[in-house]
Length: 209
Image (cartoon, rainbow, N blue to C red):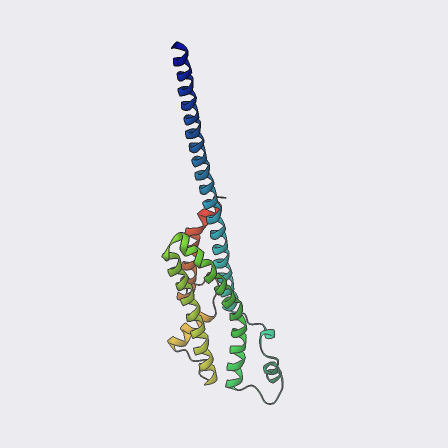
């Protein structure tokens, strides 16, 4: 009888040990999975933040290039420069307008490409940080559309020979089109505000690494 009880005790102890081992293994597995998931999520957020922040900086830099106050002669069409330098058949208002549009159309192309990259990055950004990210992306698009409208309006005024007017609206067009990063005009503030928003949201994820 005693032998039977001893064997039964050993069996129970063995079963308990196996059960305890199984529970311990499960806990370790769960903790390991949670740690892996946290690390994976942290890396995913880091990668997404880095891509989105780089896209924002690319847009900012291309805004600056498009709005540069300095226009090099090489940016103008060759036939326009020939007219400028010859003694006869000087460029008329339409020639000047076409030359100005040529300059800004070429300047806008890199900005358009960077906005396309931003749109792609915003898809994952919205999934991680919510719709506010997408809404601020729309604000950047709004800044772009404002710049394009101002360029088109100024080109239109040039074609009519009225671009040298000091009318308040034309002054605003010029401020939209030609400005530096530190300028205090409305469009520059809009662009800076958008960049600062994304920096505030994304920089902590990037710097955490």
